[in-house]
Amino acid sequence: MRIGIFGTGDVGRALGRGFAMLGHEVKMGSRDANNEKATAWASEVGALASVGTFADAARFAELGVLATLWSGTQSALNLAGAQNLAGKVLIDATNPLVFAPGAPPALALGHTDSGGEQVQRWAPQARVVKAFNTVGYAHFVKPQIPGGPPDMFICGNDAAAKTSVTSILTAFGWNTIDMGGIEGARLLEPMCVLWVLYGARTNSWNHAFKLLKK
Ligand SMILES: NC(=O)c1ccc[n+]([C@@H]2O[C@H](COP(=O)([O-])OP(=O)(O)OC[C@H]3O[C@@H](n4cnc5c(N)ncnc54)[C@H](OP(=O)(O)O)[C@@H]3O)[C@@H](O)[C@H]2O)c1
Image (cartoon, rainbow, N blue to C red; front, side, top):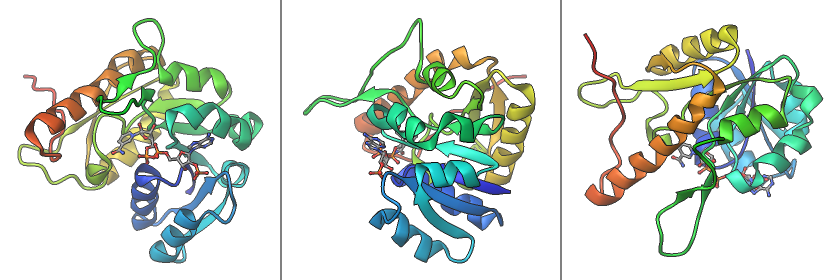
């Protein structure tokens, strides 16, 4: 499959590497077609990797991955072009965080709205699935955590899109739990803050969530 990654940060690079490891072609998009981080990533990943603008990545993609700083996400989607994402699965790995010096990250919105819902409104014809937002990027691919595999909670309005994302998550080494429509992001996004809080309190970043059931 052809994967378009929107974002050159740790998340975009880790997921891009993971998709290429599984044999997918990956184009990493950003504001600048010659972005240094993207170009270095592509040299490291090899023949399956390429770089371009957000719009190049959106046109290339059969499946897109949104991995942008929250404050730049709407702009990135505008640059990608909503029409280039129409009908395509869009994995939303973002968290709507605001950062203040000396304070832990806080959610920019919640309770009655979420980043996932915003993303679905900004790209109305994309089939948005929230995923990968509840764990640090170092564990995205083949997480090795005792008691695992951990659970990846996903949500989105399109059942077939969630089935596709579940297959991808299985290949990445995750168990998947479907939490329903995209409004579930109101609860999945605070889980990121909880994940960071535990990491900061224990100075350890090798944890992930699992729902125990019988
Ligand atoms: N770090 C983690 O472990 C982790 C885990 C789960 C989820 N997340 C979430 O995943 C997202 C990506 O995180 P990250 O740490 O990889 O990177 P990041 O530093 O949050 O974001 C990097 C990307 O955002 C783009 N960007 C920044 N400002 C922009 C603007 N005004 N307009 C358009 N694009 C803009 C940058 O584009 P350019 O390349 O063009 O500069 C870059 O590609 C965030 O929403 C984060 O909360 C992070």
